Length: 491
Image 1 (cartoon, helix red, strand yellow):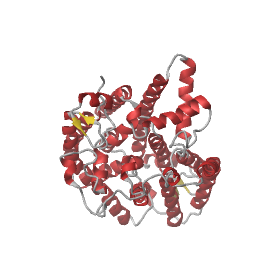
Image 2 (cartoon, helix red, strand yellow):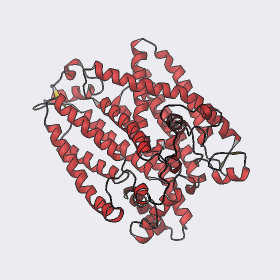
Image 3 (cartoon, rainbow, N blue to C red):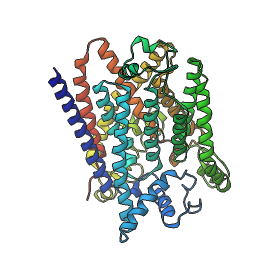
Image 4 (cartoon, helix red, strand yellow):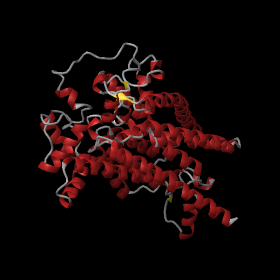
């Protein structure tokens, strides 16, 4: 029996190694063959990094319309680029950019491994771990932003890291008062599947303390210094901790909130002063729209039924501008495929001139066909998203509103989608890119987790675990479509 368990563990480890190897080859290929300039504002992200590296300062708004972006991500990449240039003084600008792309590919695999470690803390079910990892690893929006250099990717990495620590803190129950050494191992064994003794309200506190609150505060500060949309996660965590304080009748959680807010305030104050001095406003959703409002067209470019219909044209022509008459068809398309046609080898496609899309770029016949297939497959994906989300709300009510870690996921996912809709309502200019699913990319890993975790619960309850075979077949098909639509072909 022990040998059988050991063999299963070895097989599982080999499968994991294979998955990460395929993901690395995938990301490395795209990093080598993709031209950063074709990404969303690709050239300006590169110029932001270059200004810091070459001139040791932040760019002005006159130099770069992304100058209002928070600087941490750009500083973080300017440093290794400077080191690379120091050791390779002959490296030109293009070589440094390519080095950063490859570095980003490596970092993406590292943070996917951190996400896997988070999954291990959340569940012992290996099927849930693998399916969630594969769903996220081959997720089109993540692949797209990893192709070029953008602060969206930096925020994604930090959100993954923050949730790893929050989940780890939540996974360490500590009894009120002193702990007898003989109980420590028992506690550790019951982290993922506590016995009724450990579930009793008030029997234990989670592993939060003041030092860990400072750690979370620092990481949230870095996230906010990377992108303003980190406010969604900050508000989600604060609301969740307030809920925990009242639910468990433990005022320490309120102290942790004050510590987190204090750390965020102190670390972000210099940047907010700089923003106020140079861009006139702080914590503004979009400084660019505010500063350019006299020059930019202010007439909304969305229809009156934009929020009320679904544009089915995307199933015959899956690229922009198809589907632009509905927010839901745009969100659906951007979630499943390279809707804006920025993720491939644009230079090569423009030479081959096979199919022209709405942004006047070209796409290959193969990518066009497989993108349509991915959209049809996306119907199943979105049904699963709805199932995982609604089932978790049901679980929350069933568990008498207990503020566990899954509630934090729910709050974050809900807040992210509401923020995306709010951004479009506030800035109804989709031609200028105010509606992009990558803005809320960080919410999707945890939505994937809720899907497969709740699915596992039902399969376990009704003794249908054999259906995991069908699920893995569907996952393999999903990976195949992702590779066909997102693999960047070289010249």
